Length: 181
Image (tube, rainbow, N blue to C red; front, side):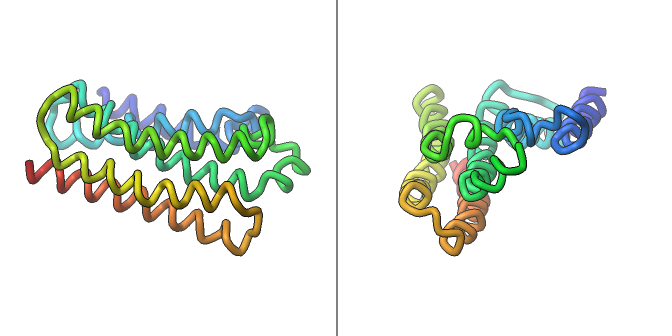
């Protein structure tokens, strides 16, 4: 039942993302929903289905991937801020400006760095998770700098893909590091 309920809530959120008068993508709430549903909800749901257990650390670990998924959305919204403003799409970047979007992107990368590091500090276990923190730190810093320094779509378009690759690499390294230690 919990997985069915979670699935129905996730589907409803997916529909609410672009449908209706108050679509999440047009109100500035999309970032929060991406963080939650692509992070703790997805990770906890996947873990629970496989283990039939849900330790407290699992949804916390999900904050890292959720933050990087949100960074993908932010890179898109920073790139498209002028078009979104013209279309009355009230993303957080439209509401608070490009600089805010760049800082929030950096904050999401930082959250992905901090989550595994904090988990190791608190549990004194699974040092392999620190590798994911290092990946996010090294690659994420460079991507954040690129986002801050240019408005050129020819550079920002590949930044979306690079942020997605960062998310993929982060998850693979985190999982391998966790499994190996």
